[in-house]
Picture 1 (tube, rainbow, N blue to C red):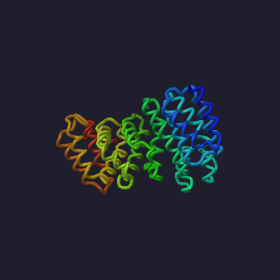
Picture 2 (picture 1 turned 90 degrees about the vertical axis):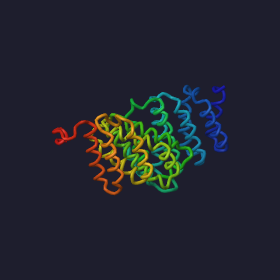
Picture 3 (picture 1 turned 60 degrees about the vertical axis):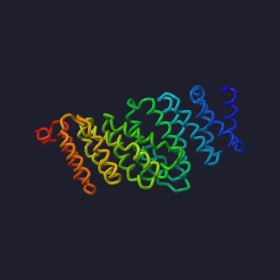
Picture 4 (picture 1 turned 120 degrees about the horizontal axis):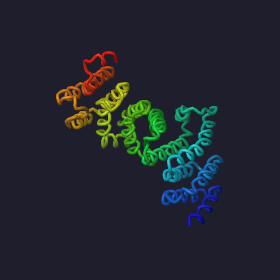
Length: 324
């Protein structure tokens, strides 16, 4: 069936008069039959790339096409996702660079500039961002531990999007909850650069609790998971070199979600032995109260976190701690 239908649909993609019907049909096929499509993936990506470059379709159809490709790529092995994604977005990024009147720049700072471009370019930027987010989330579903570099870049991309184009997180096509949960998972990676990028993501995300409803929703529903992950890192799960970054996340939580943070800290610190068997209930209570009192002095929060992590690790008052 697919071998008969797909060639017709792909051929129709090149016809502007069949734009709506061809793209919507491909999107439906990619959504409903994505696990049957790997043998056809290379061809679908190649044809889609060609019609995107030629600008055959209007903005809304381009966005549908990107969504179709997101469904398609999400069913592939990680290596195939990366190869096809690179093939697809490279010329598209170059096209966006032309729109932004910039010379090609292969560095990962490119998307930062694109986010700062004019509002006329927002729809294709949105489509590209949603495609990259969708396929990267599929990598998380398959297991991201073998790809800390991808996770690092993904968190940087999400952080820059929040900083420069927070409206991207208003899209119904963006799974904000899934991105949030990927961030919580990434905080537990052993690679320090990945954790730093993830902390940056959360410090950019939390201020938008007041103006981006999907962000407010996920933080209210799952913020405790973030607090638990941060406390786990402070308790000894992460390198001591990352304590400033964890302190920044706590500071942002306190500044933008004070009432919720007071509840989350109390609940998260209640279990005996968490985040470390070396700290008493009294020490945990003191730490919690100290954090909640500091809503202005970020430096003080960093000092509180560093002091508490030493207690959690059994290093408080040791010569080793003094030399650090």
